[in-house]
Length: 335
Image (cartoon, rainbow, N blue to C red):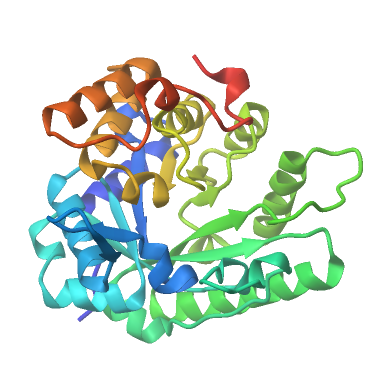
């Protein structure tokens, strides 16, 4: 027996591709696969009742997954293979309409555990998860690539992705494609990095047949122009989404999802911006409200702090700090 994508997700993808998209069709995914790159350290701390803290465990992390799925606010829960197995054993997905997704590769540029320096170097293609095991638990997974404007590196990345697509199609595993910006400066001549990344994506996918093509993209927000250009390129076949990156301020979170949607993006897949929030459920609820036009980003931050106060939760930042847009790429279009 194999698991299928939930009707909720397939319906949204269908409406987006057909041009019938409405803001309520915006896809939000919760990325809780951090241990595949950062190990225990990526899960942060768990505050105890006596005010002390301890490293979060897999049980803590998976409880957060279960709570988010029960909220009904996200469309996809992305996890590691081991977490997917644990969630399947607990029947967590049977009680929700959230689609399970599994990280299917872990190239070395996400290896960021304590003491590691792999991120200082270009990525080497690598896959831990086996597709046959992943397909028992999910119909969709994440595959990630990074392009460096280096012939040999980019050929190796493209060849590894080609092999993955062939194997994934063979077992009936769909995927979405994550495209990272390089973690260090690269030479793109007179072209902006966003233009280089956009062209690298289109070049990569132009020769890919529909049965093996990604369902959508997850990429870094490289500014309004870059997002708008790629989203308008082939909207019936190439659905563009954004990754969350660093936690940032709460205003950063709301601006990122708002600007992504405004300039043609249709998916947000956030990890730390959700998990490290003081109230993960409330921040996702307000993300949806921002996308659907029910509230602006400034008022969303104020509402978030009001909710924290009503629950007796101490915010990590003052409201004045949390209202700041700290990501330079978001500032030109901030409301």
